[in-house]
Image (cartoon, rainbow, N blue to C red; front, side):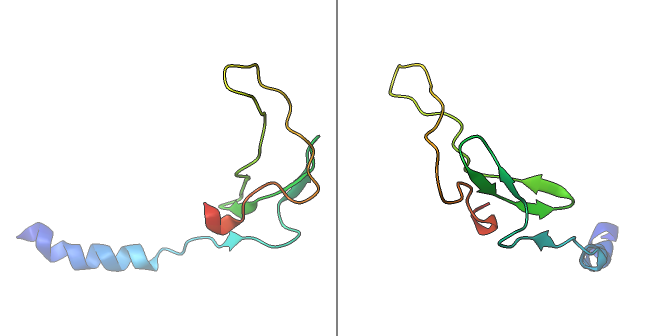
Length: 80
C-alpha cells in the first residue's frame, strides 16, 4: 500500500528531469573518413555515427576496404 502511494510522485519526479536535446543538422557531427564523409548526431555530448560501411567481403572471403562514396554514408538520427 505504501509503494502504491509513492508511485504518482515518482512519476512526477521523472517528468521534471530535463533530457538534453538531440542535436542534428546538415553540418552537425560531420567528419571525413578515407572513404568519404559521414554524418551523425550528438546526444548527451556524445557524437554518434551509425551505418558506416567499414568493410566489404564476398561470402567466406577476406574483407576489403569499402569503396569510396560521394554522398554521406551514415543514416540520419531518426534511424537510431
